[in-house]
Length: 342
Image: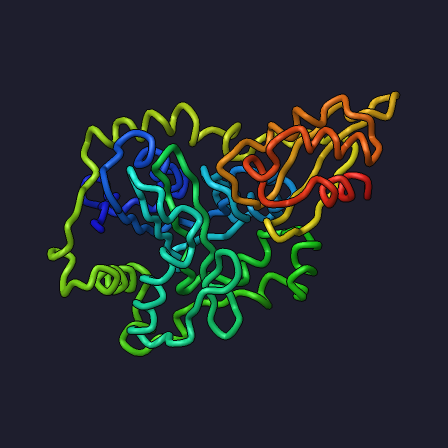
């Protein structure tokens, strides 16, 4: 494994829109063979998953009031709040997909490092979370292109919990499915669980100590490193202008169709926003959620268009496509039951 230094002109980059676009460039363009790792800190921002409806996840008046960025990542997963007390780690794997989907493989070096720094209760829980005392401080996600992929997540060190609770408005069903009533009741910062001197560090210094333990090095100079070049940054900047730094990508469009239903399943939250025509057929539909898939949910949308709005017809339409490959491992019937619960 080697480190990918994402600084620009020898200075760290905190712009969340820039940082969230890096994995796409590293996987699709630069393609450094093997196992690379990036780690960075974002300015105050809300990061939404590629398949999420930002308008259902975010308190927009508060976002605007506090001048918080809204950023859409290129992978799935849920909405999270980032600030200078939070860091993001991403493994960039090129040319080998043996561990795709294996969150524990990528979480374990983080967990081992935190144990060494005093947070001995840190552990993997569920599909993609790292927790301590039953509270989440890291959520992970992945996206795949051919035999290459990015796998990583957040690491809450000293996040502003009050701002996070104000700006995030998750689906109530998602909270109820986990037996909790608020965002704050199920997340925590890792800082308070660390030994000194780590718990007295700021996030930037803690990040350096964490990297040394992940790479089992006494100094960052001892770590094999690739530093992004001026040429790399020219391409990254051009992609930002064309896509990732646009409102169309980050905010998306709220279609505002007549019906909106949402439910949390084992694969994550799935939501349908749809309308029916005078013949009781689906005329428009959009699928949202924090599910993680390497496929295209639009395949299911296309299958459902013009389908009669009854159980047998809807199941038949969904059974005609690859649900597992384009959404997740879930049968057609529970999805149809959700649709009919409008």
